[in-house]
Amino acid sequence: MNFYKSKVIPGIHVPIKHTPEDMEIITNVASSFNPVAIFELGTLQGGLTLLLHEACPEVAIVTFDQKPVEDEAAFKVLFRGPGSVIAYTGDIFKPAITDFILTMFRACSFGPKLLYCDDGNKPLEVNTFGPLLASGDLLGVHDWGSEVKMLDVAQTLVDFTPHREEEMKNREVRFFLKK
Ligand SMILES: C[S@@+](CC[C@H](N)C(=O)[O-])C[C@H]1O[C@@H](n2cnc3c(N)ncnc32)[C@H](O)[C@@H]1O
Image 1 (spheres, helix red, strand yellow):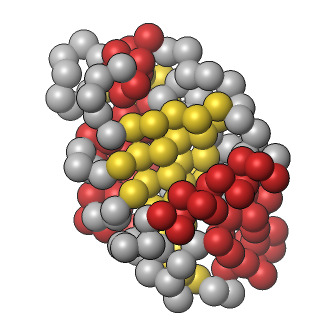
Image 2 (cartoon, protein in one colour):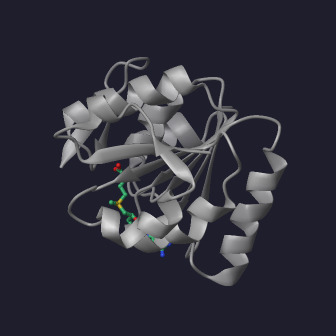
């Protein structure tokens, strides 16, 4: 397991399931895309949530996991202060939660959103939530080439164009912009 080391608060390290190279690319993409909201599917300990929060400190972040976040450091920074991060516990594929996510997508229709898929079933995430995004939204996917392959999501990605494709070579992450 890697750790995301807070750039803002000394001594805060939160476990994260991303390589340092992927952390760097996600930071760059998120901060330059400048979304109005970020949705993360798969919080785990909150390492990527903290990275996204520090990359886009003004942006509302909503993160989902079927299990509550347990990491104490993440709690201190993300979920107990006056910040803009909200963590929901629930199975994202249960119809009530999927509907709830769609409702929140619609509430953020005043600007582009970033949806990052990092849950237990990436092909199903992309194929369920990708079609719910609006034109101009950005879709991020982790474990590209291992847990999710182009063939699994090709039908959904017909409506997207690869985002900063050149920089993603030899990375486990991909981004796609909705047409
Ligand atoms: C790969 S981890 C997320 C890693 C995290 N984004 C990071 O970078 O550190 C995947 C998470 O997805 C959660 N998960 C798996 N299936 C889920 C589902 N159907 N609904 C909600 N969460 C789920 C697991 O509990 C696990 O914490």
